[in-house]
Each structure stands twice: as C-alpha cells, then as structure tokens.
Length: 301
Image (cartoon, rainbow, N blue to C red):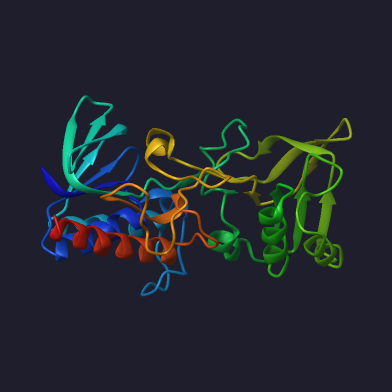
C-alpha cells in the first residue's frame, strides 16, 4: 500500500514524486517506457531553469535521481487498468503486478503523432524533431522542413524562419487548416516556401538527415534540409484511464490548473491535461500542484 502512486515518469510525474516524498508520503512511480519522458529525445535542453545546456537524457536522469533520493520507489511497467474499491485505488500492470494506493496522480503525458516513415524513430535527435521551441535553435542557419498544416505547424514555421536559412512547409492539402493570419505572416517571409499537395516519402541521409523526399503533385522531389520538424498533432496516453476522466474534444483530461479530476483521489498533471502551453516548466508546475493536492487528500482520509 502506497500513499500516492504516480503513473508516468516524465517531468510532471517525477516532480510530483519529489514533492510528495518531501511531504512524508510513500510514493511509487510507474513508467512504461523510459524515465524522463519525451524530453529524453532532445539532444540539448536550454530552456529549463538552472541549466544553461543539458541533454534531455541527462535532465531525465537528474529528475529520476532526485525523486529516488527523496524516497520514491520506481517500477518499469505499464498500467493496464485502474479500479477503485472503497477509498483505495488498485492498479493492474502488464507484468501481472498489482499495486494499491490511497491517491493516484496521472501523469501519462502525450506523444507526438508520427508520420510513420521508415527510420523515423531511429533519427529522433539526429534530424527528426517534434518540438520547434525545444530544438529549433540547434538548426540556426540551416534549412529545415516543417510537416503539417494546422496552427502548430504554422507557428513552428514562423519560429524557425527567424533563425533558419530556409523553411519548407510541407502539407498534404492545397491549403492550410490553421489561422489565416498565420498563413499571411508566413507568406511575407522570404525564406519560407510552401510545399503544398505534397506528402513526405522518406528521410535522406544515414546517421543524420540531409534531406526529405516528398511527392508533390505526382512528382518526387528532394528537399535539402538538415532537420525535419513533425507538427501533425499530439495524442494523450489516456486510453486505460478514460472512464475515470472527463475528456475534452481532443481526448485530453479536462482538468483545471488545480489538477483535480471528477474522481475522488485521482489527480492529473502534465501534457495529458487540457492546457494551452505544454513545456518542461509547465509539466513540472503541474507535478507540484498535483502532488500537494494529493498530499492534502491523503491527510484528510
């Protein structure tokens, strides 16, 4: 029996674990992939307070080390079901393990939608990126491609156009789904080229990307780029927990800044929560808020 069980070992979950342990609670963190979350994909992080520059892997390791140093226990497993009996939560895992806790913090995160191209996962950190804010500075002075047609893709292209020598905006349709004002702003950029009615076919390059092969209007074309920013949306990892949550129209947990859910003793933090900004700092903030709310809940049982 644990006081608090955290589902997800990214920045939100590990921050929550640290705060809960410091409040004297017994804490278990269950992570299904790799501790540290999506940030471990980034070769360098330069926008997290206290670090001039740190690799995503190193930052994830430090967050994990801090949580464990405070007393948190960790398990590498996948939670497949969440049930409640009385005032206790029961978590069943893929391995067959079952854990019991008084409160649960759901910090399962959200994963970028991938393009499904060969070697996409292999080239993450070597040219394939999913966050222009996080990684755009590393491609300053270089040509890049942005794949997508919504607001996220348009905003990424605008951001990258400030530092990159050339930005190819690749979209499978003949017009963008994003805001017209964003499109107008991009049209005024001399170093932005719209590649419409096009779909990405393959990454060019061995260990690092040197180009993106696309098919445009039935003709293959290679874009000479050093980086490809994929901006075709995110999807929250909430499938196993959806019945306990109110979800917004995009499938994210519809919870406010207090991180409370409609279920007693269940809290939500980080990128799986409905919010405007998803960054390392906002994930960590959510973790702290959710942990303190969970601590108060446990104290009042």
